[in-house]
Length: 102
Image (cartoon, rainbow, N blue to C red; front, side, top):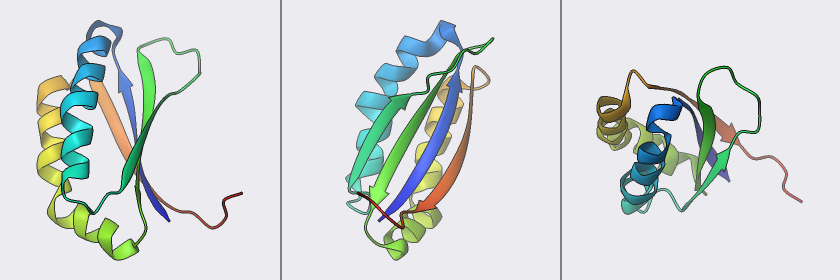
């Protein structure tokens, strides 16, 4: 299994609007291609001086599917959330290869 984790830091002033957008637009667009098979959204539990952080993890079974998605479909989806919420939102992505799950 492969996970594409995107960590977002969102300013408090846009947090609810951002969450609504993520649930109604961002995640459904990520799943639409069928290359991504599921998603989990989690609030990162940490005291931060500015904003709130979230982790959204997208799952797929094949590395080829993840590579194809990142290289061919991800940029317009990411650009949409970036255009709508930056500079009040920062993000970075991490690709994970699950080696054990119990």
